[in-house]
Length: 147
Image 1 (cartoon, rainbow, N blue to C red):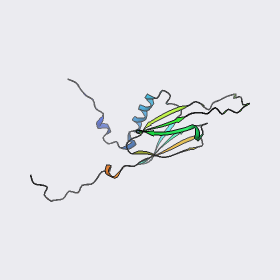
Image 2: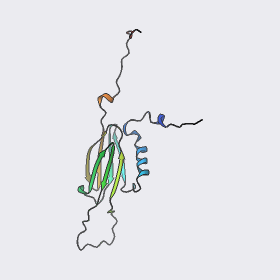
Image 3: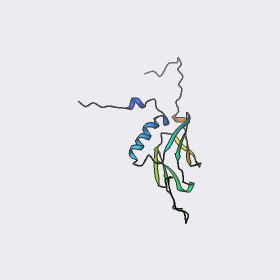
């Protein structure tokens, strides 16, 4: 006799990004260098989220965001722009390339991305279409179709 273990009941009350912890943990397991750069995932309202990535030393042209098949990919590639005659005595700001992937829940869309003060802010919004929203069905005392 085979016993199947299902986690489906745990996710029945989850909608949108409410399961984001599991999604980000699975992304961390799949990405070998996922600890760089550090990032935060913030919930600002029921349908508004923000991913904040520490991108110190990167400029807008060094960063690329792409959404494909429900996965947001953030790629950073550092240009070689060392000034001539500059010798680093200590170089603590990481200059390495990175790639972070975030699996987006259903109906989550990227609204805006901005780089300010070394932080890349990616604003996300959950837009549930009308046909996917719950509908209230009124119960009345009229008879239904006869068989």
